[in-house]
Image (cartoon, rainbow, N blue to C red; front, side, top):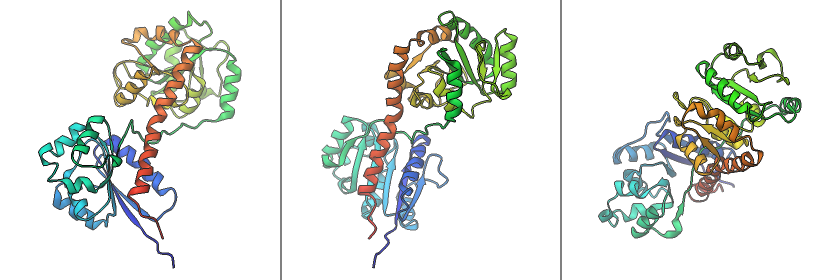
Length: 363
């Protein structure tokens, strides 16, 4: 008679970013319908993070935990010790040498040898962390490099019939997108469009407004631009200079239509959209210096040559003009796609390690 073995996996994360990763991992692990309970703590989780050896021991018992995954930038020695005492398999993901040495001083490595050995796999951020673990007698076979870890990239959906219709109507017109624009951005966007249009006179600007679309369209018209509104059920016409969308509900459509995306808000309020969204759909990014809450993602795109950062808004038109070269945008689009999907590949590595080392097989 088959025996159903049910595991309880505790995912301990130490930041909102790692909580987002935990949510993606949660969904992946439960997708197969195997008997598994997952409890997530830390970051934005509803369940409080147990702190201290007694709290951790109680948590492990109360939830009947059979496996632990520690995600993030803080190594919790109490969790490692209690898991070792209870022989609960543990995996640690995302540690640097500073995190490790903050939790365990080098002179204490031998004292904490058993908790360190109980960790079945370490995925660390740098070679120095790897060497420190090896010096603590952790087998090198249990240590691997992590790389950039991110939640599953949600490839934004779109209506293909609508995309095909608009793209066919545009023919070979060059275009760009201002994503998340506010009313106060209109004058700068209009000036940038006029500057870039000197290089490509048929240039079309899509505007996905964060504010009221009707008011946004009116503000562009007041500056003398020919505007078409999606709200009126119209597609861009040959004479259209600015096409104002219904808002930010169909970003998957407009990222696919526009070969260049300017991320609005990056000159003050903070980025209006996640830059990986356009990058994953082949639309290279232009941004200013105010890049929170996605600063890490912008930095990765910038180092890969997948974005153009400009210092001031009055350089936006020149920036758009620079990227109108098909060859250049193609190279940037490829680099952006690779960067925006890299974190998902690392997430798959973490998922495979959890399945292979922290979960028991049903019998």
